[in-house]
Amino acid sequence: MGLAALARPFIVCVLTDRTIDAAVATMRLARLDGADAYELNLPLLQDGSPERLRALFTSAARPVYTSCRRRAFLRVYGADPDQLPLWDDTERMARQLAALQLGSVAIDMELDCFDPRPAPPLGTAEAAQIADLPGPPFELTDDPGAVTRQQQIVATAHAAGGEVILSCHTGRPQCSTDLVRIAWVAAARGADLVKIVTPCPQMRDLLDLFEATARLRIELPIPFTLVGAAACGSLSRTIGPTLGSGWVLAQQTFVSGGFHEQPLVAQAREILRLIPWRY
Image (cartoon, rainbow, N blue to C red):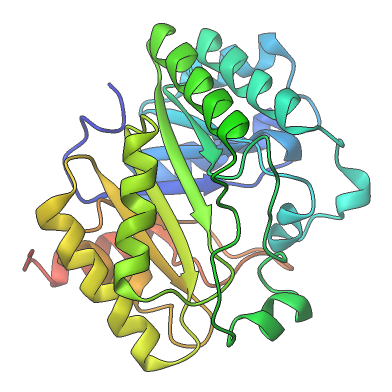
């Protein structure tokens, strides 16, 4: 079963383990806590051979998709970028497409793939400095050559029977109209699902995110999730699905140096149980 076919809202457990065995153990524990799917961060794995990856996908009781972020981004999970592989965008996408052949159900591709325009990694001083500043989103390109290559990756993934999440970490606060526009850009490029993460340093930014969530719930024909970061964004991670976001990004347990803004799988499941109202 693919991600788009899951009953929404669903809960994704983000796997940040360094070994396949640890990731399998995390998946099993997260499933007991209520996870519906898993995101596997390929660059973090120290033993991600094709044989080992196939074994992981085969052992999973729920869908597993991959992400393959640029190494600077993975600082948010407590990783040292200098200890991670330096893969360019072509290599990152090739590894995800290969994972589809091994049992992954989807890939995650940023909207600036092949024309990198990354925001400073979440949790860094640089990210905090720009999170209050207006401006165009990071991680989004309109370069015709890059867009064509993105569409080719989408077509290749679809031919392999996989789905594509097109994602954007905006780095700067965006109004509701701009968030809706980014989602439609992703849909136009062939996305099966859309993920947007945007800083919400002020309450008005969170309200813009919620307005965009409600609008996309009515207008966008594919599943999406809008996630707020920074001071006022955390509420969106659990309440957003009641307004229309299709899934929650969560973690099985908090780890030292990890990304503690993400709720626990068990917390997300309990919140969805206690707030049965859906837009």
